[in-house]
Amino acid sequence: MARFDRLSAAAIAAAVACGATSAESVMAETLARIEAYDAVQPQVWISRAEPQALLAEARAIDDRIAAGEQLPLAGVPYAAKDNIDVPGMATTAACPAFAYEPAADAGVIARLRAAGAICVGKTNLDQFATGLVGTRSPYGIPRNAYNRAYVSGGSSSGSAVAVAAGLVAFALGTDTAGSGRVPAAFQHLVGLKPSKGRWSTRGLVPACRSIDCITVFTDKVSDARLVDGVAAGFDAGDPYSKPLADTPLAPRRIGVPLPHQRVFFGDTQAEYFYDRVLHTLSQSAELVAIDIAPLLEAAQLLYGGPWVAERTAAAERLLLGNPEAIDPTVRSIIAPGLDMRAVDLWNGIYRLAALQRHADTMWQDIDALAFPTTGTTYRVAELLAEPVALNSNLGRYTNFVNLLDMAAIAVPAGTRENGTGFGITLIGPAATDIALMDLAETFLAAADNPPPPPLDLGDRMDTVKLAVVGAHLEGMPLHWQLTSRDARFVGAFETAPTYRLYAMADSVPPKPALIHSTDGAAIKVEVYELGLAEFGSFVAEVPPPLAIGTVTLADGSSVKGFVAEPRALTGAEDITHLGGWRAFMAGR
Image (cartoon, rainbow, N blue to C red; front, side, top):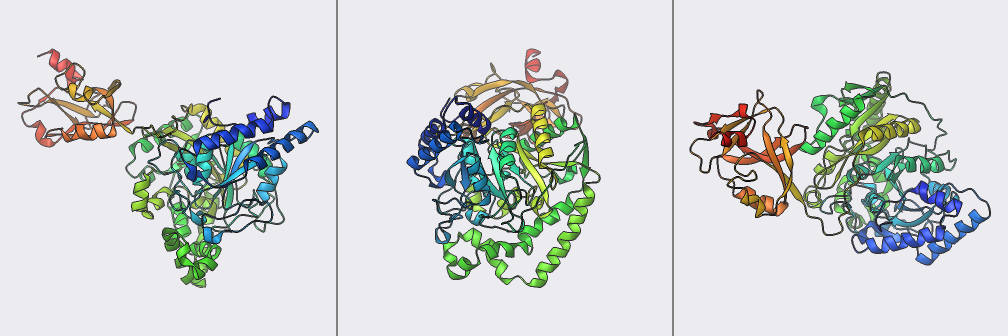
């Protein structure tokens, strides 16, 4: 097993149960993985249990197995977000001034412990679970495991990285506005957000207590199903726990946003992946385009309405007594709750009730929703420069789910060229958790996504794919400008049938102009991959009237490529009918 291969909870539990391995051996391997990855991202963790204590706990699991106990999670190592109580490790919510020593297991932790799972440590998070980015912690910024220039997603940042990097088999997160789904999307994971009340939140530091959910990140849906089978259940000690009966779901009609409501913030790769998702889903279900404006209005209530005051309540004592101890961005979000009026709260409750009724009616016309988890992703530097607006962009498709009492599961649906993940979230009414997991497995089987890319262990180089159409083709006069930059040939392709090709007048050497047109044709191109710096230097040498823009290929994907200004057509010859530059040059 490679050191950072992802782990399977089901496989580990089965191997320990049958004696093929021991919980102690699994834990020893886990500790070695964690130690090795500390050289890459130690900021994944806020605290960890002592190795000898973990090995002793593992030996106790082996003794229970030897005594004949049936443990569904025998010896499975996992991590818990550090706003969930685990005795022996302080609960900080990523705020040292808030930290306390819990006296008892959180409700979910107690269930996992009884099933044989072992919590190895507490993971980093956006402070007080306020954020979808992972950049708001004094313990460091956990970065995307596949490209560390990019955010991990939050607020359950460390938990997602721990699973993506193969340090643990699963990790607990939490979800108020999407924190159990956004990190899953960015890091090619499954993120199960149970229905409100399905999993106990006793022992959870609240963000918005009335709508908080504890969640799980896994590599496969089957592992999420296994953990749910242990963690779900009514807890009389949690006033928000519910005895929910599973509701069947026949996903024959799947709701998707109206075309003009599918916002990707300029991320053409995300848009392409979502189009591909819709094609996959359409093979087995009817897609119903719905107006998502009421859902977006509900989402706005979370941070733009009185529910901000519920976040304020969770940190009120610290906010009043030691406000400088709170992350500045987090403080700017929760402090306004101190000034909110009771009348604003009631008006918000009334409006949410109306939107809830709309959602209940919506389920009469569709069986489930399939939304992008996020429309895009961002670099860490971008989030640090614009921490609120960009975070809000990431919550467009997630913020309404808990407010409107829905279940959800996020699954992978594509890999960007930079290695970060694109995902979708399947959403259903409360208590459809099992049915959504079934739907997720059906979708993933049909989508046949490639495995995640290699982890970014410090040797990753960001690259750009560039389509060339004329003088930079192999064997043409300017091809050396690519080879001198160590460009890698990706392949020969055709554009979408929306381009026209012209031979520019008086160009030395002869050069084409590629123009987007509604009455165009498919044009032959070659695609090369360059390092980011090499691409930048290449672009700097492109002379007018040519430029580098975005070119759509025949399969719907987009790459960078040569385009032209309108003046390039002065005296130019339309050679679109030839289908490519080589045919034109061969005829000269």
